Image (tube, rainbow, N blue to C red; front, side, top):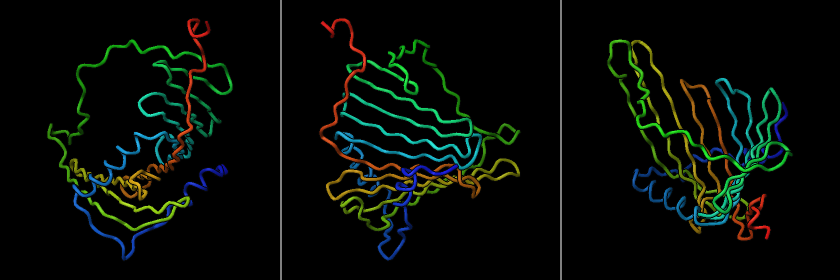
Length: 231
């Protein structure tokens, strides 16, 4: 499978940034930077281009390219293209005027039916035991740090990183899962880029890269007008 140009462009941005600029952060320092940037970003009209690659599991080799446009707290548009061994799937979604619309491929837009299924009142913990009825022995560690700076599309950004490691010991087996998240934050406090990766026992599982564009001209409208709107 040949990688789409978009994948090459997005992943070309990722370079190891560990250097003399690396500085350990406390959990609080990281939270102030990360959550502050994400909160500011959510108030902006923006376009987010994402590439997600499955590197393991039943969906190994699948590539999802997604573009989402947002009008804060109002409307949303998304285009999702999934490339897999069975072919390419294209889906579009619009949320506008408190209504949802979907379109498969280049077909006609349809109103999305509301989900009337009852909401579960109980949720299982999903905990794994060793057969004795005991919960697994779990060790968790978190590392937070600033890993340098990088210029992206003319914007100077500072890069922060979180690494979360979980070690499960169930009986004689041991499973180590690692989750990485990096944020590229512009000087105006908004997110420019986001990257996440996950591994299990050293094997890559998934890799996602998102690049943010801010566009005050974004306008999202319902693709189907009601009879009342057509009058």
